[in-house]
Structures are given as structure tokens and as C-alpha cells.
Figure 1 (cartoon, rainbow, N blue to C red):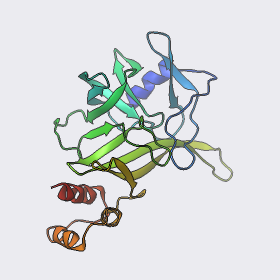
Figure 2 (figure 1 turned 180 degrees about the vertical axis):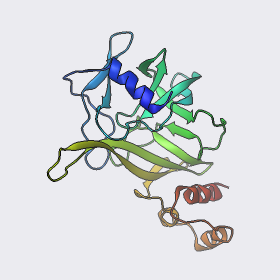
Figure 3 (figure 1 turned 60 degrees about the vertical axis):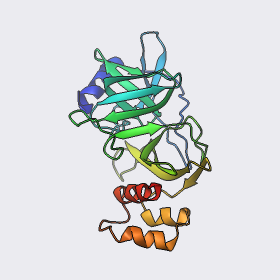
Figure 4 (figure 1 turned 90 degrees about the vertical axis):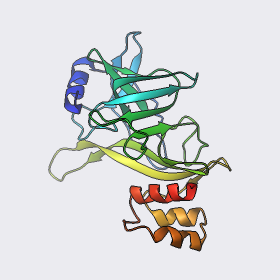
Length: 243
């Protein structure tokens, strides 16, 4: 089921409700204001989805609904299809029998794999999210981070959120669009500490943040031919440090 079909399901199922949803996506700066569209699950509970019908873009992480493995706080886990993660209200959703539901269990981590792709352990090509990290810059232990790289010493984490931006055009109408926010962090496993490395992909920033010795940095660069300011380079360097 593609994104357009999923949003069509929302248009049929959703009704406009005058509720003020408390969002969990706050970070440094304005987290945005969502719409009032909600759905009801089988128990009659309202699920704020933050969808605005005419907003450009999507609140979800993926364009297509994906296979998911979900790990719960009670130690159990399950796998299923047709999952997606809303970066607007920081909630995991799934579609079943043409109805949209929020995962109500206490989730500690989950992995999304695009439909049609192989399920692998490559965290760069799959999408693995986890929480339980120390709070930093407005996040808390319930905030989900995408785990880009992990090892014995460090984890490379990516915080993502979407807010609603209003776009003003002179002489025209005001339009709404979903605007992405991103920040990168390193979790020091031994120190149990979060370190900020900025809002843009930047491998040299990892070096300076961790005070990596110049000899180690030069040894790493000998076998590198790619760009130093993209996520793949950051992941490669983090894996190198974790060896």
C-alpha cells in the first residue's frame, strides 16, 4: 500500500476534532503545530495523527509502508507488515484491514525494512530506531533515535522530527508543508553519555567531538575516497572507531 492510498484511507476514516494534542517531538526550537485530524481505534480511543489534508509532504518517515520488527519493554517482540513511523507525533503506526492503528505497547526499539528489499542487519539501509538514551537538547528517555552505527564503544544516532511550516506567497494563499528537522549525536556506551555533533552530516565533527588522535584520523583517511560530509562517511568512521 503506497502513501497516497494510505492517506486516502485517512481521509475516509478521519474527522476534524477540536482537540489539543500534546506532542512528544520537542527539540531545540519550535516543534511546530499540527492539525486536529484524529482516528479512533477499536477501543474508541482517539489517536492524534497530526495530519493536515492539504499540507505538502507527509508526516511519515517512509513513502511506502514497510515490514517491521518491534521490540517491547516486557522483552517480547513481533514482526508484521505495513508499518510506518510518524516523525510528526513520534508514533509507530500500522495498517490492518484498511484501518490505521497506533502501536500502543511500550516499545524500546523497532526496525523498518522497505517493502521489496531484503531484511538485513545493515543499519544504514534498514531503519533501526531505539529509545532509552539520556536526555539532551530537550529529548528524554522515551525519544526515539535512528541508530546509524553501533559497536562496543559508540553509537551514531540521528534524531528526526517533522513540524508544520506555513509558507506565505505574496498575493496568494498561505500553504502548509511538513518541514524536517535533523540532529546527530554520539552515545558513549562506556560513559553512558550523549554528545551532540550538530544538525548536518560531518565526519570531521566526530573526530573533534571525541578528540580522536591525529594518527588514528590519518590512518582512517588512507583508505577513504568518499565525501567526508555525508552519512555514509560518518557511519564508516564510527565503525572504524568501534573496531
